[in-house]
Amino acid sequence: METVTLSEVTAFVVGHYKHERLYGRQEKNGWHDAYGDNIVRDYHQRINCTGSRVLISQHEAHNGKAMAFTTEDVIEYCYSQTTSKDLEKEVEELETKFTAMNGSSNEIEGERRLLLTRIEIACAQLGRVARINETF
Image (cartoon, rainbow, N blue to C red; front, top):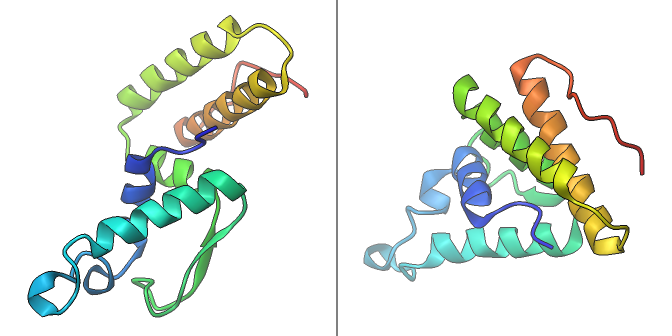
């Protein structure tokens, strides 16, 4: 199950990586043109497959400090870059999707957890509490 999209991971990595260590590496300066895209795809795959923390080293981090990040960090970052109006719309769509999900399989439960996490993060960005309260 994909917990964060490639575009979300791209936004997060671009926001935290030194440009010259990511998309600044191109064929004209001795690197393959797809170098940056390959790095982002690798982060995307690792964070979705393992669900654990992924590291940006101090050499790559734009602030010079190594950082580990999770899917929640990626979602939080992306939502922080979203307007309140768009975030309100996102919450409505997520809540609708969440309440429409029925069943009790592990896959459905996992998807419901992810939706609830997204709802909680979006509501926190909006400065309010999520209306949906679910325990698993």
